[in-house]
Length: 489
Image (cartoon, rainbow, N blue to C red):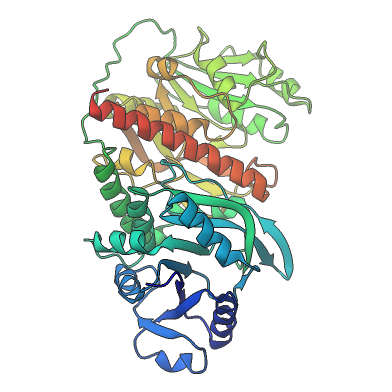
């Protein structure tokens, strides 16, 4: 074999394929370019200087096996988008050099993003052992060590229509490193111009259920291979402790939510329940009048208004202030300051769920609404992908566990909440699920307001990367903890 690259890309239109092939071949390092397209469509490739592989999809197991068979070079490159690719000068040589120098099974890089005719840098993040999200952004150009590529394809014993590339990456990661090159090596066209707050719920959209089922299957198999899969065996919990004055506490951390905090408080104080409950509002030094609104409810003795001594607290730190308060109840129930409970039975239903399902954490469902409480897509978020047998394993792949979340206070006090303002709930949920059963309520319990002042409504690339990097770090920590536990360490 010569030290060259075999390239693969999906068919979109003749013009785009022709431009991408020309860009790849301009490096002088490409031996062959193959287009993946459905059988019977070969005529579209006339005058494109590309060969073809027939398959029903670029991410199918079938397509990857055929790529492995066709690659007779030292490297394999995949370009996954259908728009013209513009490789930077010497970019392919750089990727090959780093792949060879590091012994990586796969390398990927930062890139320029062309969106609405404007071009801007798009950095990506480093891969970790816990980077198990199937939507991890590698960019559209990935270079593989061909032997690693072929070996991984040879291990594929499941047929996937959607999860082939995900399965490939997981299998390669079991034996090789995946190296991020912090250099802008190519330009791709971005067509998904939605805000970050609109994209983040794609994985729970019922229309994507078939895709998600395959991704879960591939991830579960990977966890079994690396010694990180947990069987459905859980520690028992008992709620016979008598050290709590209240059965439940609703916890609302808040900073500068003058437009919504009143609705949130009323939705809690309006609860009708046989359980003794209170509301703990942790006011993190609001400056917009939020504090005055909270104080206006002081006549209701169920309201506990906490202003922390410290000024270095994130949302997680505020949760700890509430949970470690002697006013906290046996169960701590979440409500964000933007949102409100759907009716007056929520506290009852959550506390009942703890007792009925014998769990240390309960996760409900919610309905997406705009500021005026009118339903917006995708509507109900119920995380029905969760199963009692595999939910805590699949939790390492998806980006969240759902809401509202409620915790058995002694367990939460033992774990503590990370003092951050993003991903703190996910971190706690993963840690609890390592040992305990998580209960579910699949009917909506609260209305989740989406508006411009949500903290994750519109994130720039740097902020979105920081969030994703932190969640991947949480997954890595949890995966390592599970592997040590299973190994008896």
